[in-house]
Image 1: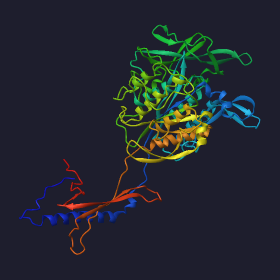
Image 2: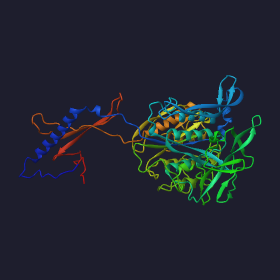
Image 3: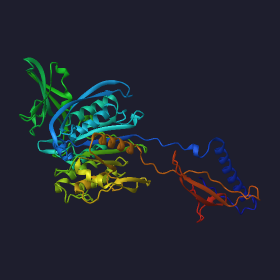
Image 4: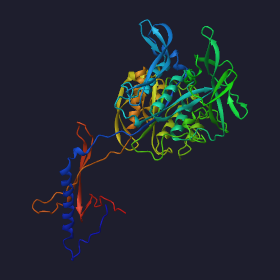
Length: 579
């Protein structure tokens, strides 16, 4: 609002003061009349619409997710026998109205003497995510009325390769279209409980992807990793079939064959995955993806390409991550899902699901995190410092909880290089986190980066009787703890996992917008003096909560009318001079 200088002492225009007051009153009354003539104050407020949500899911596929988890999670059950089964899930069109394909996947279970089936954690994870991606409009997923164009999801997982452990990005964060959902389904299906739990290093990889950076310094050449082979064999009553074998562990020795370099499979580390009389009908999804083949006689080898750094940093998972998650054509850094200047209504986050205690990390953990922050002024420094502690944890200093806590703060900091907070939600899967639920939740008031105040129900992360690892994971995600701020979720069954995914992505889509106050200013007139003002103006301040049955928060502000404009109690202008 432009403030004009008015000479109220001018003898040539002695009525300028009264005229300014009359003009101000007339304008305000005119605005009020116009407003009343079209709509009421309540009618102009519409319910908020959610922004877009982009989340990268880092999934624990460590050995503790396998059969051994059944006894750990159901200690009071007497088991009869163990077995496995193939489950089939229909894949629906994007509108959720028609079946266009299907997917089968293996699950492992024990059957109890009570007649019930008890699945291992990896099977429960698949039984949650595969139906969700197969039909995101189902009631078990996001619901039939969901606007799927607002949700984007990508996947990452742990890896163990020649004694090196870390995390990798398997699928970039993309829209939940049919073709993208099929890619997600293939990844989830191929997961096996076979790694360690490198939480810190895997977290750095997820963060680097969201930031569009790299956990390494340079990339120099394309190398290939053998993922399996197929060949024609005599099977099933002396009939020829094509058999597919998956490589379970690769050699650490890089082999050169002409212009190509690759990591071959270790001898004896192949496992049969499928057989079919038609080679093109083999279930190649079991290999987890490949982009090159090499035929030798009766055998076809399958390879996955990646860019390898010429700077030694074996702990980085960048080389093992899909090229679809990297910037083309050089593949030197991740292609962040946060594009350009982020919309204030959009939200971004990392969904980190793990079933236990971090049991391994590299000597390069700090370097991985530091490299991922290369596009910002933020730094991890020479050592990690946070209130998350590795003391009294199951694996001690290998956990690197101090680094995990400090890194989560950097991601949630608007100065992170992308200019928006990247929230981290943690999901405790398994019996080690059950004690947290037994303590119940408490009400807590938290202040978001925008300054907005929110009242939430949170777990009591510091409750007595809870292991230090469980406390740390709870604090890492839980709101109000000062770390990832995406929430902590306890999951035990498949439905719990599905619910946590849905809740987190809905929370992320409700991006923080500063509270907006609203109201109509009025200048009361002297009832005995016509258009003569009483020298005061009143502004009701409301914080609208559309469709809420509760009273809205509000206040009534009183200002002085002086020389045709508004001033506060200190006689300073309410509005600054517009330039």
